[in-house]
Length: 525
Ligand code: G4P
Image 1 (cartoon, rainbow, N blue to C red):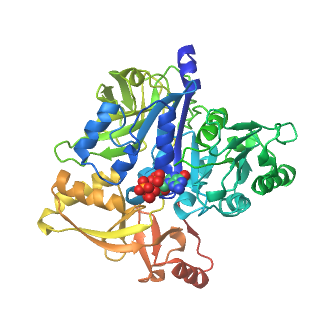
Image 2: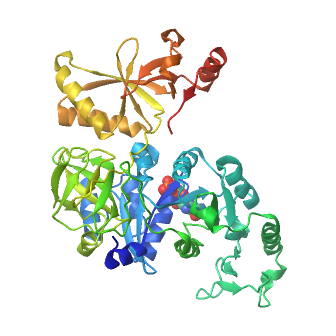
Image 3: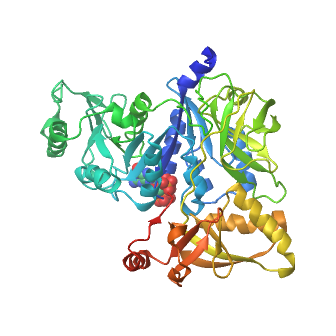
């Protein structure tokens, strides 16, 4: 059942994440977007946090004052009549399964690529998750103020490496020292880089894409090259296809430079024309949940432990899927049918109190948690039982052997592991032969958080022995023979008791496949 007020609020929501490889410019572009949103921050605030120039407590103070997330996990602002939620996807040392899971809570993604480097590994991984979800992906080719790769090459790389069609919305007129501007076929204009008249950086184009006004740019060979490329693409490239964009099969591509704030607004304005409003989320129990429904529903996609030992609470991040959140509302936790009152809610995602109290589909709320929630949990108000589809498990790449330092403290060790694994902090495997515990993660940080929390919350000092990166491949139990295992492909069981091999490298995997051609090996995501 729809509700007009909720419907209007949902229509305005745009919730997305920025996916990129470290150093491509995600932080810089995020700052620009916040500036457009009128969230006045001193230049470089997000950056200062990243480089750890502030103690954590300073950060809380600073961010409280500005009304911005303690962790910058969710940034909300209004722009052009829309309420925008940017969900952070931590990279660098902070890369973890949470980074992947965050992508389960967004409606679209912005892929930032360093135009001098092209597609890099982390972008590829994050892209694959967006693709699996079939959400729209928009591309920003960054750092045009530096010498960039041939734009034609960058576009074909999207197709060759990621398997997604690229549709250039604009085209760079040079790069680095000879950057003149953008040939913007979408807006039918040329956007000048460093225009003489700062108030008017645009030169209009006619129907055929030629400069309307007599301008010396027309004689510039850099411009002519760009125009030629654009003409060629218009003739022979992929046609613009909104349906494909919606399904994540075509990505609109924009060029620019986040650092010098060139082409970012052009990108944002066009992006908002196509970015989808919050969509439906699938349920496991065949209940249809529409974002406009009166019933409040949401799911937990991330749990962040407080690293400060004085505050042992955690924050559970909820993606609202329908209804309107009201402080103090009663909800049911689907997993155990427990009734909870949501009074202790963080305001981390809002600039004003009002925002929290109006959270609707697309928004994120943060619940203080004392151990009630697990990743993937559904919460809902009212009577209708809703269970959102499970979040996928991601294939870990890094592994550690773990044991209790003090053999007398096995009990707290087991309790801690069990709870942290349930919470989704790390994945647990057991060796088939020795019964040893092996932890799996997608990022090093997960191990560090695990070790810290075992010590602080469960009083269990652990010994971690790195096994390095491995390729995890599940095997059909019917085909399993323990003799297949060796030091280069270690046989383990996952949390469900399913067998898998941890291959030392792709060479070991190939060798195995050649030796056992009939054995099926599968990866998760
Ligand atoms: P990330 O969050 O994706 O990791 O990237 P971040 O924004 O931190 O940018 C990484 C580096 O790239 C930074 O330089 C930043 O200034 C630079 N950068 C971002 N966008 C552009 C751009 O459009 N053009 C150019 N030329 N550089 C860009 P740094 O040297 O690591 O940091 P800083 O000391 O300069 O701040």
